[in-house]
Structure formats: structure tokens, C-alpha cells
Length: 219
Image (cartoon, rainbow, N blue to C red; front, side, top):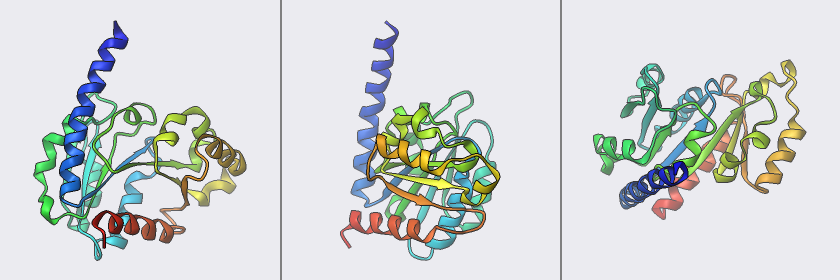
């Protein structure tokens, strides 16, 4: 019985996700669903991305947070449209929550819409939000076993960002083990090694996400 209930929930989520996807595609908006653990560096990653790309693209952000707007306030300095969704007790965003806020943006004036999902590697992965793709962001400080422990996220993601590369000398992170598990789950996945605080390794990400947007618009 419980499995049936969950299936119905996911069915309803998928229907709304398809509606959202059709809307953003019709507006030539690249919508990216960023999924990571708490503290992996999603907001700092978005800060660096906004610094580099707001001169080239019109960017918006949907911030998923349990109770606060602290992450959103960190992005205000970039003068971009931001909508916060407080999930209260919820561990993820769903397509209905995205559908309710999407019209808060001037969709005709957006190129890229980033969704910073609630910090969690499990729940957000199972819910399609209508995004173009999921981006998995993990950090060396969390350990090298994330692909092995949470394979669905890495299987679903179009690209993976490994953040906090500068901390490897101070952790027991085994890079070869991480890459072995990642390749076993999804061979050839697009992969970026970065340090957002040191601002290193990000140029390849900037170039890649720019190409994703250009491919969408056909320019």
C-alpha cells in the first residue's frame, strides 16, 4: 500500500514537471537543478558562477531552504531575480513548488535558471522539477564514498562538480577511489574539479554551462 501511495505522488509530480519543462523550454531558459549535501558549497558555487556569467547571461535563482533565506541574501549583490522556497519540514523541492513560483520571474528576460535544492543527496534526486538536467555537487570534505553510497544521484546527473579540491591534503579523501566508483556508475560523465573558495578550476565549468545554454537557444 505504501508503495502505491508513493507511486501516485511521483506520478503527480511528473505530470507537473512536464508542464514546467515545456514552459521553460518555450522561453529558451536553461533550468539546472543543483543537488548536494549541506555544506558542500552550492551557494559559493553559485556566487562564483554569477560573478563570471551575469555579464553574458540573464540569470535567476530558486533557493530551496528548510527555514531561512540566508543563502538567497548572499546572492542579492549580483542584482539577479531570486525566489526562496521554504520547505519547512520538507527535505526536497518538488515540481508543484517550482510551478507555483516560476511566474514570479520575468521568463522572457531569463537565460539560465538555477535551482539550489535543499541540502540532501537522497530525496531531491527522485523528484523531477522540470529541469534540463541535474548537477551533482559534492566536496572532498565529505569523503570519497559518495558515488558508491548514493549512486542514483550520479546516475541521474548530467555533470558532477567535485568542490574543495584545495582541502584534499587535509583529509583522507581518495581521489582514485572516487573516480573509480563514479566511472563504474556512469562512465564518461562530465566532471569538474574545483575550489570555489580559491576560485580555481572553474573556467571549464563556465565554458561548459555557457555551451549548454547556447545549444538550447541554437545560437
